[in-house]
Every structure is written in structure tokens, then in C-alpha cells.
Length: 272
Length: 277
Image (tube, rainbow over all chains, first blue to last red; front, side):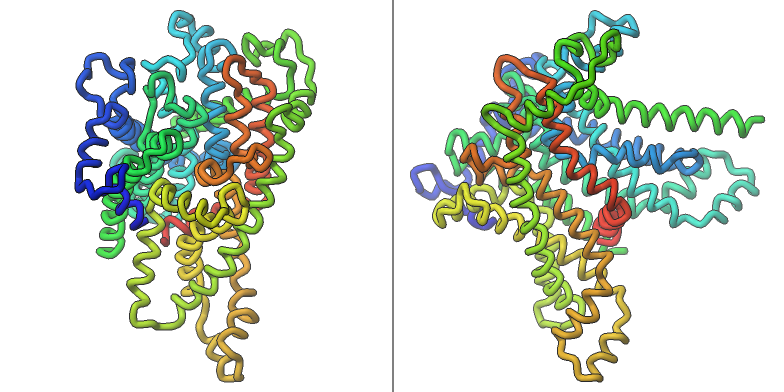
């Protein structure tokens, strides 16, 4: 680990380079490519891996968090809940590399179910190979990863809900509190530790995302790198271009981001 | 009457969610058991339906990347990578839980921080160390990395578990003249079997499902692991989805079966690892 940080401060010829690797890496279009925002993801390299990771977080985190929470609450009163939970949790058990292949297949032009459903709904003009189209590749993968990951928040929240005493709800009902009021005043506050856990683990997972993009969009991060992410770019620089210094720089940036998340979580745990 | 209505709506929502979640798996499964020309325009067309296992045989004995060999290789890596760290880590965790060292808390804190570090951070140094030791393309190298990587979270998990065990039993054994190691092997470990099962299931699945570490350490086409063969089988110009989906099902099968049979331990491990950790 320390060696990675160390390497990131040296140039390829082995001279001490200070922070120049960092400024170089951050000015590469593979990492940050915001000059041409109007063209969006269709331009070569998309918006850059760092931005792609941020987009990933801003869509995937709230979606998987809330769908897990809502499903956990609904499933308390449903017959066969354990079967449904097992089905949704399958995505967590699947190797992510297989998950990427399944996503590619699901979004494919002719054989994919997504386009099949669009055809049935009379939206045939929108069908496409979602992951091969640079405009939609990133978003198709993100929604796919919600599908794979929701099982996690569902299981954690389900476990959390069983710790809330039934009397609280009975009392709320007697006081005439509405469903929404009960949710915001009782359920949500009592689930706060679970929320912290889910948010942290999901953030870490999103930052490290690699396999899904590799097998779903391809080792280059999709057509023109439209779905590239930091972890993938790091691998490309290290083991395709053999530029270990830049790769180490990306890895250090990535680790710094994860440490921010972890330290935030540890501080919360200590305060508790 | 009103309650009944909401109950029905809730059931509809829940089961349609389940349907959405299972559809992608179902499509892969259906594609894998049917000849490819039957599913060209969607596996949901059942005008003709001839289930066959030919895709599975094709994937298992694939011309360039036979999956059968890959699955054997994955077992060769995953089994030792599960047991080595469990042995080492449960000893270490017992130490953290029961014995006091001056720097114990700092050591423990750094173990927690290590858990968050992305694998990418160690990729370059690991690759350099392993190529210096001539362990690239060698399972020993990969097993070592997996074991080291698993140590951090297993120590944390087992320590939290050991703290819940009643210390009186161990004290009684000590009074009877048992050594620390005897206490550990004869009393503590047998009491920890459920926790150890959880750890084993999780660690095995992570190693089995891992792709990144295998990708940077195993290159020889004969020793590629099962997960490594999947993207290679996709081919460049023509994708034979039948064979590819059969391969995906085969690689998924091991963790899914483990999950199906050891669900209790898996979920308990997952929750213990996150919520209490």
C-alpha cells in the first residue's frame, strides 16, 4: 500500500516527480473530460472515469437504498416474503463478472428482455443495444447494478426492522398517526444505524466498481470509454499500458476517496 | 374492506418486484437450455421449444477456454483461500478479544482501515512482489493474496463473536490447569462453529466470485479461473449467447447452491459483519 503511494510520486524514469503525476492524471480525458459537457457521454472517453463514478453514486445510492427500504417494509406483511427476499438477494450472490454478462444480455438489441418489453408496450422505436450505445451505456449499467445490489439494503433493513418493538407501532396507531407519520417519526429514526451501514458499504462498492463494467461493457469501459470507471482505468494503465506510476496515482485517489467514507463511518460509530 | 385492499396492493407490488428481479436470471437460464436459433428473437417466444443440454457441454468443453478446467481451478484456489485465513485470523481475533497488548487498539484500528482499501491499491505492488518471487501464474501467489486480504475482515468478525462468549467457561478451564492454546482449541473453537461457518461461506464466495486479483496474477490460459473464462468466451465478432449463458449459469451455480443450503449462515454473516462491525 505504502509502495503504491510512493510510486505515485515518481515519474516513469524513476525521478521524484512531486505532485506532477496527480496533475497529469487529473488532466487526462480518461479521468476528467468535462471540456465538452454538451456532447455528454457520446464523446470519446465520455465525461471521464471520475465523473462516471460520481454519476454512479448519485443514481445508484438513493435508488438501491430506497428500493431496499421500501421492499423491506412491504415484505413484513406479505405471504412468501422469504422467497421474494431470496430472489432479490440472488444478485448479491452472483459473481459480478457474471452479473455484467447477464446485464449485457438483458439489454441486448434482439435477445434482451428490456427491448422485448419496449416492443410490447409499443415503444419499439427506442429499442437498441443499451450497453453498446455510448449514450446509454453508463446508465444501463447503473440501473443494472441497482438490480444486483438492492438485496444488500433489503437484508440489512429487514434485520433492522425486526429489532423495532411492535408496541411502538401499536401506540402510534392508537394515537391516530398516519402511515407516513409513523414511517418518518418511528421507522426511519430507529433504522439510522442500518442506513449508515448501507450507505457506507454501498459507497465503497460504487467507488470500487470494476467487474460489471469489465464484462458488461468490455475491458475498455465500453465504446469509446463511455462507461469507464476509476478502478478500470487504473487496471488499463497498469496492465495494458504498463504505466505503473499513473496507475498508482489513480489507485491513491481512489483509496483517498474510500478513506473519507470509512473515517466518516468510524466517527459515527465512535460517537454512538 | 379498506385493509383488504391495501393488503392486495402490497402483495401485487411485492410479487411484481420479485418478477422483475428474477427475469434477467430466467432469461439466462432459458437461453442456456435452448438451441440458439430458437432464441434469436427473444427467449420468451415459445412457438418452438426444444430443451437441450448441448450448450452446457459446449461451454464445459469449450475449444479455447474449457469451463470444466476453470471450475476445477477455482476450487483449487478457493478452498485453501478459505481455510488458511480462517485458521490464522481466528487465533489473532482471540488474541484481540482476550489478551491485552499495549498497542492492541492501534493494531485493531489499522485492521479496520485496511478493510476499506480497494484492491486496486495493492495491485501494482502485489504484481511486482509476485513477479520477483516468480509467483505470477502460480496459485500459491493468488492463495496468499486472498488469504491476506481475507484476514482483516475475519479478524474483525471473529473478535466481535468471541467477545459475546461467556468468559467464565474459559476461566474455569484455566483454573483446572488448561493452557491458553488448549482453551482455544478445545473450548472456544467448538463454541464458535456457527460463526466459523458464516465466515467460511462468505470468504469462499468472495474468493470464488473474485475477478480482479485473478486477472492480475493468472495469465496462462490453462490455469485461468472460472470467472476469468467468462468474458473471454464472449468472443469478439459473434456472441454465442447460448454457450455464454450456459457458462454463466455453471459459474453462478456454486455460490447459488452454497447460498441455498447455507442461507442461515450466509445472512447471519453478512449482517453480523456489517451491522455490528
